[in-house]
Image 1 (cartoon, one colour):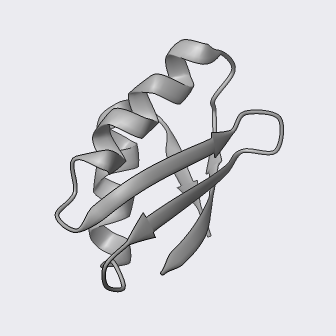
Image 2 (cartoon, one colour):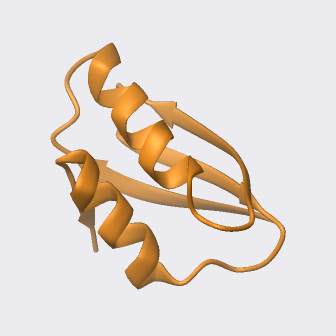
Length: 67
């Protein structure tokens, strides 16, 4: 399944890599795609993810999950 989240504060390739690394480390995540221009982070996972876990991973990367 795919879920798209909105992340604020990303400005460069390093930001993208940080978010991909942290969110990608969550259990069940198979792929993380980031659109830097729009701030959209699309996560492919086996099952629905706990939004609190995604929020914590994005926070750990130094950014904010919007909404």
